[in-house]
Amino acid sequence: MDELAAEAGLSKRTLYRYFRSKDEIIEAALDKFMGEVALKIEEFVSTQHRPDEIMAHMLHNILLHVGRIINNPLVLEDLRKHYPHYWKKIDDFRMEKAQHIIKSKFFMDDKNKAYIRDIDPRIVTTAVLAAVQAVANPEFIITNGLTFEVTIKQLMEFLQYGFMKEEK
Image (tube, rainbow, N blue to C red; front, top):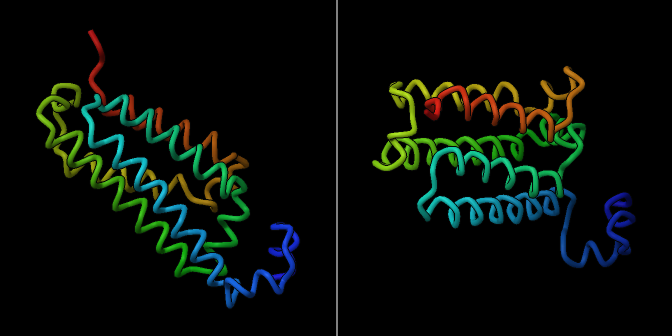
């Protein structure tokens, strides 16, 4: 709590006035973060956009919000190690959002189907979710000496052009 108070420029007493523990602060920050991201995603995907525009927007949104809050992979790794229940909450959130977007906007949207290769949606959805879980995680990022930003950009580029039809 000392570090949090110092970083926030508050006294510990002020911090404890609003939060009873570090867990409560982490949970409040994660809830706020996930709420903001969910709102931005829903606002965007509720309008008509091509799959490549959706991917680009998701990339921008992820980098904007995650970079602002947790731009250091060590922070993510600490969260994963010391607060596994919060890490699971983040992981469940990102998997749910990714699955929803892939199914509803890429394969169930008649206009967008024309841009997608003829691949079974179950295969694409499972492959994308597995790639996100395998690559967009602190252990992979740290082990490979990458940054969160570089990892997400390259993963999104791979996913975007890996299953999109070539423009003719």
